[in-house]
Length: 300
Image: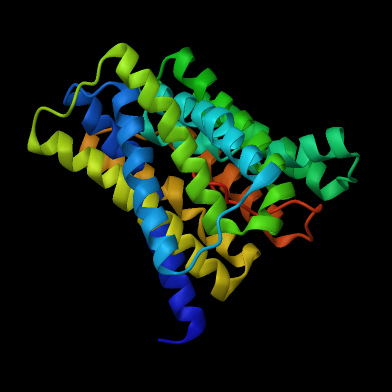
């Protein structure tokens, strides 16, 4: 397999892993697993496995101010983003939540201009407008989701956007894998405390355990490592473009496994959002990374 073909394989694997995370979360909820326990198990299992992988590869751990900043990104930014995303799944369809999260490239573009006075350009202004219109169509075409789920889905995109803008400052100094490990272990610590305070409720069936382990291993560890491997071979622009498969996977699998319906209006809105993601990933960067969902901190 050529280097580029291998890169495509890893990004598709990563996108599939992140894409099915919402479906596994829905299955875990059905088994009675509360949010705090599910996220604690997700970050703890994935964080420990990443740390072991890093030690095996001779990873250099961050230290000093960078370590504290990454810990804060995990304990505040990633915890907040994951909370909004997974809570939104209790009030909205998996497909809609996945599409709403993909507003983050447009949000990052706007925040970069507002906070750092970076020039957007006419093309990016149009792209942001198209993304917002796509969101309106996707939300308006969803007849089953509650407003709370929509608000939380947009909140996840907003928090993730801020997380990316902070992460772009520290990642070049420490590297993606060490940063991801620290972020996840910090998030695991916060959710571990939350789970102990509210009461740890483990999965009650084999299906529940399968869902939780799949979130931690397939939708977090494998998805993140796969993205890193693909990124090395394809570059940020192509990797980000291929990562737009994520919400497509979510919508298709949610329809097949959970029986969620998708309207033509939703498909049109989703296509508009994904078109903006592809467009922004192909343009010259505004000194900001092309980082897809859920990656820590590349987050999902």
